[in-house]
Length: 166
Image (tube, rainbow, N blue to C red; front, top):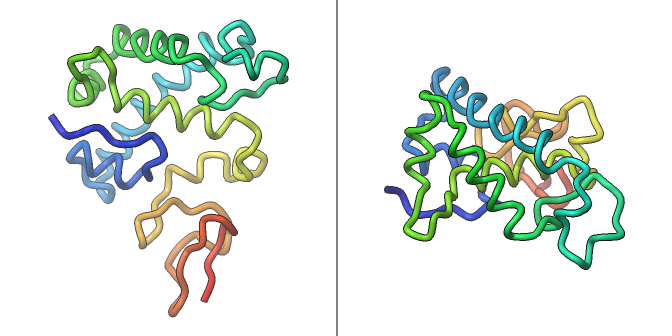
């Protein structure tokens, strides 16, 4: 079993941790199957559910970030996704199980589903809502028209500014 990956890891890191080739079309299909299960769980079990929030976020209006939900609520949804997994996704979820019953594969995906719906992400408010599903040449996710496609010569991607810089 691969070691757990932190929730904030990139899509590329996630795929590589699961021994998937980011440039393979089958990987994209697998990713979307995993993501679809997380989206359905989010929409039916977390979206707009104020009673599942940690006390310090109870007065906040939706949409909610993953960190706003109690650990028990988030864990319950992770277990729900695992119990309803399709034949295609179950082998990947099995790679993420640990002795404590946690699953880093599902947690990573559910975190990213929440992240693109919590209202803080610029892409969530733009036409590029699922821009995390496309990898640029550097392996990071593209998020603006300036960062899509190939990396400009002599520049690096600055995530804080959501674009390339010298």
